[in-house]
Image 1: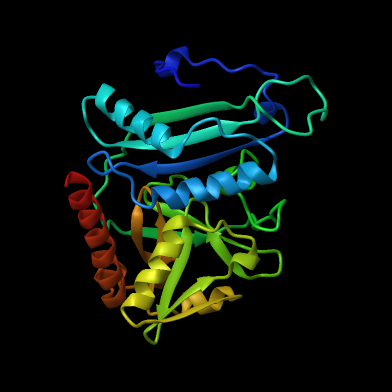
Image 2: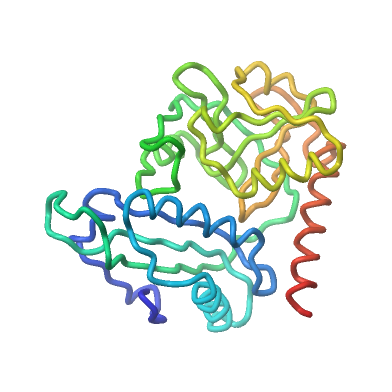
Length: 281
């Protein structure tokens, strides 16, 4: 926290931090692979765009953040970890007086990666909670996370199950912690950013992988029936990578055995291997 290495139980933050009082804060989540981070620049670009829009200064460089990531892995026995980089607006009086925030609180959380098998299948359900509209032109990964919390409360567990939001106009949006993809007739489909979804870093990378292998790609506004009638269905995020969906409600899909899922997943794993090999040179 703020350039100090602190055990989690000793972390303290003021209740006057505007990240607590008004939700003025943003975060990124990612994991390490032998100390490296896939799409790290893309994560930082997304974070810095949000901070700039809300006039919150970022006091640390990307190199300094990377150093802290690697040091936290080292302090945790050298194992790869799950990270949340959190920037909140900092301490101010109650009220919306500041026109900019010059002293944010920057916390890099590290926890043990949850046990998982790469490519392990999940099921999915449609949520009753609708995807809310973003407060900016595009959705930022901000402290205003109640919509996701409300959706999460509908599920018994996120480990085996993902919840899918639709918008108030009935368009497929995103998962509680993921972006949604499906394949139909050899074409990859994903909801458009204008549905109000988070512009995921892994989402963008998977789209580029699909184009590199010659797949058709369609971003758009799709109803639930279009996802339900897909040939293959999967979700993405930076920690769980590409997660195949086996069932959506009572609809069954190939899951991890999907032809195009396997191709895209293999390309993703190859990118991780190439990154680690490049970092070791």
